[in-house]
Image 1 (cartoon, one colour):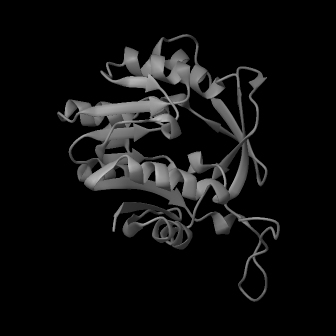
Image 2 (cartoon, rainbow, N blue to C red):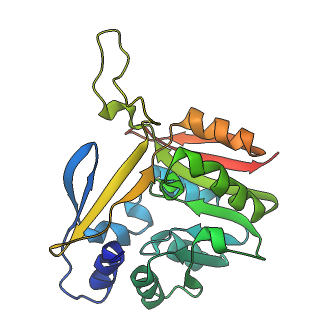
Length: 234
């Protein structure tokens, strides 16, 4: 991996001539994203993210923290926040922004720590990669929770991206779950290695949570088929 997503974040933070990121999936055309969006403050956050910030409690783990905007807001509110991301460049940017405990780490490798709140935002289910891997991640997240802890996670039902049939149904792939996408990121003329990225509809997330000993509660629905959910131990 060339870590182009992280490079864009670090370029923006260090004012190193940042450019738009270009993302493309196996079911959608290339789309440009202004890196500045990743540096949004609380007022600029979507309502789902604002709600997650309001619900945070105790010791917090921010998984896939990116540019660290959620962590930074919570840290300023006085929370003990640990921020992790697999992107070395993104973590450098987080540290430059003033995050006190930001480190390069895959959540599957976190050991001997417990948290009251674990947040996974900006399609938090994405890091699961595929539906088949979802249980592995949920079991890991569950193991990192204190007894009364919570996981705050968002995603979207992307069924709307598929063609609709006359009977109202959708034409979706028959060889896998329709929310399993392949993402490609390009930046400054370079293209990174494609990677799997998972969008989960709420019912599928709820079923997966129950199968892994977690309760699942729908907290809020957004305007674009997205939602925020809370998972906690039964």
